Each structure stands twice: as C-alpha cells, then as structure tokens.
Image: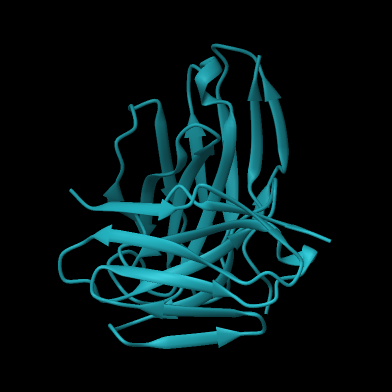
Length: 115
Length: 106
C-alpha cells in the first residue's frame, strides 16, 4: 500500500509570494491534516480536512488555507509569504481523523525556504 | 488547554546503555496516545498506539507503556540506528510533544 506522498519536496520562494503544497493520502483515508514544523516551535497543527470539509483548525493566520478534493487529495496554500514561514510542512492521513484513535501516517514533508 | 511535555529534551547514550523517555500530558478523557520516530528532514514514522492505562507495546528494542498521566518509551540495548527524535501525541493528534532527541554513540 502506497504511503502518504507530498509534492514538491523542496521549495524556495521570496517574501510576498504565495505557494501551494500538495498531499496525496493513503488510499481509503478520508482525513488529511497539515502541520508546520520548525526547530523552535516543534510540530504545530494547521488544519484538518475530512470529506472535502475543513473540520478542525489550528491557531494560524488566514494566510494559511487549504482544501480537499473528492478523491481526498489535499492542497495547502500560503499567501504573502513571510520569512517565518520557512519550515517543514507535513501532511498526515488517517481513516477517520482527529479525536479518534485510528493511526495517523505522515508524508515525507515539503521543505519551504522563504528568502 | 491540552499540554504534552517530553523529557529529557536530548539524550546521549552509549550503544547498549538502556534508558527511558518520558511523555507527560494533561488531556481530559485520554483515549489513546501515539509514539512516533522522526529522522532529520523526514516525516514522523509511526511506532505505537497505546489505548488505556496499563497497556504495553513492544517492537524490537522499544517498549512503550501508558499510565493515566504519562507514557514511557523504554529503549533496551540501543544501537546507533535508534538515533532519532521521538515524539508523542495524544489521540486528538493536535498537540505534539516537542520530542526527545536521542543520540546513540557506538
């Protein structure tokens, strides 16, 4: 069974630009969550999508948005990039998602560098 | 607000020197806790799910245990390939611990 895939793996952008990251979950998984990981803050929850609806949201500004398609694939968008947005962005998928005890599996991440 | 604290932040062991990592949490109605291993620049890799106090799970040199307020990851006779950051997260999957960075020296 294929794991969670994320594209691209690496990105370099400049301040003010916008970026779109993509995530394909494990087949059959309907929940996709996004996390930001930085050395100083660790893993921080951005949002969760389930059946094309945002079901949970973390404490991030509106510049961070996402969506999920009918095939459960998800995209995350960051507009007006700031230097502090440089991070490893991780996508994770599970059968039924947050607040349940099903296992969540992570993708390899997208390393975003903002110059 | 849910909180998850992992200790120590960093741990350096000689190969073969056993030790334990701690994950303490303040989560009401805990219904499960997950342990992950993360190598630098990669996504976390699932290790264990613990569902209730008293439960134990084992995998090779790792054993995870759960009480009502904390979980332990015991590493027996570690090898250099066990070097990684170990993360815990309650079942909500929102609040991750900051991790324990383990280094095993040959």
